[in-house]
Length: 618
Image (cartoon, rainbow, N blue to C red; front, top):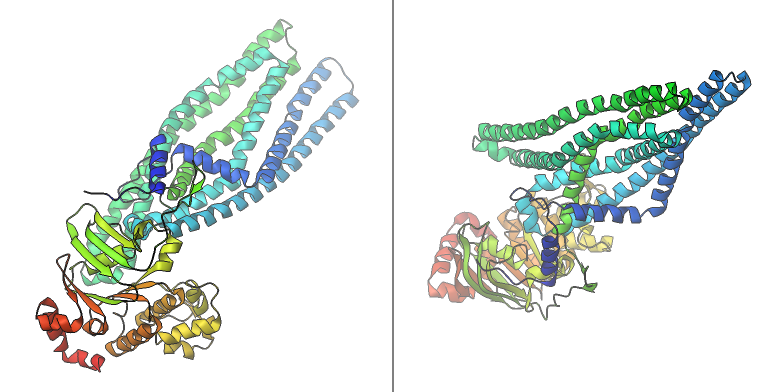
């Protein structure tokens, strides 16, 4: 298999990939970011809101310090009572405990407020970044990965990462600060008792280490299982009519149950890890408290430490269970969210990168010299399978109207995907103006070439919203002109005009109307080259003929490549390319090919003799 030469972007990614091991995604799924990339991305998110993050840290630290007042003053009360101190002294110490509790409450509340604001802003950045990266993904990558994987990352994984930023992260940080302050307080009261408390926590360290070594992989496998299940369910739902028509219901149910079983098995693996971790933690909580009470009692008998100090240390260590419990209970969610964030950041591996980070130079793949498209010795296969295209050579002149015809399975659609830069040839090259099409950045590529297929999508929103996807600054008059140019007369009868809502709860467009809407987007996008892959297949012959004539007038002077099943399109083209078995077998003008009495002539005579098509030829 011959691969195309690497661009600077590809070379940079290869160096980055070689420098850091990262989890391998399941076959066909999108990449997963490695630990270093995840840490770098998290640090970048923090730097974007440094002031709020710092304020959150400060108030959490103050709240943790305020929480230390109670046990220390309680120890003072015990010593005061034991030494026969006054009631007034005890009352003052008790008021100090109350003041410390109120201060901790207020500081914790404000720290949580700051943490939530930081989390929501950061979550918004993650969502925006995810959308930008998803839109920058090559179409072939999305198709191979499937909608399920991308949908799971954009919903479940982003939501999980957001919950960590909003709730879990601040909770864990507060708990960690409290734990450090508590241990510091114990050491200040008595270093020996502090050492006893720390040694008693060793069991927690071993149990947590055992868990963390296994949890990350387990949660990545769980996320991958959910992505596969989402893909199966989405494919079944979108193809429900096909499933029903071909009697595939039992097979699809069996496939869904199999994926559900894999999700359950992956979930059970993570549950097993938690079933080992949490009992070990519960036992470890009691060990330091018991150790301090036993050793502190012995030291008190020898007058080495006061009773208040022993009680205060025991209370501190008992209080330590609360922050440790928070940390350890959130370890599961932290592992899950880390895996989710790695999946979200994995899109950066395939999204377009405009800047080479190690050199600071903008990558320049070159500007096409003109609109000429050259296909030179192209071979292509899907996923290492049999070749779909074999040694295809074709040149399309600027401003030319080229029709590509041939029997089903000849490779017409595959060739159109290569011409549009969606796929990359296994062998040979596809260039526009002597620049490889697949190497062009998406924004430049879509100004150069636009592919319109019979598959279309109507977005939720108004007619105006759907059209301005192609041209954000288009005026209403330009939008109406685009609709008129493709024969979308139905738009003139809408009650709310361009403000008519489309989709559920609004106007539902049938196939022909939705296709005309897609063609109007092409008119607004105003590309140099338009590839129409049976773009009028859903229209009736008369409407299709009218639409094609209107498009021909609108796209006059531009390159138009039409993958046609109605040979009238080929009749109107400047040249016709005939494809058979993955090769271009005939190329020339319509009249010349008919006179040659070859494959095209046979197709033309067969099509022209069908009575039902005659109205479209008038």
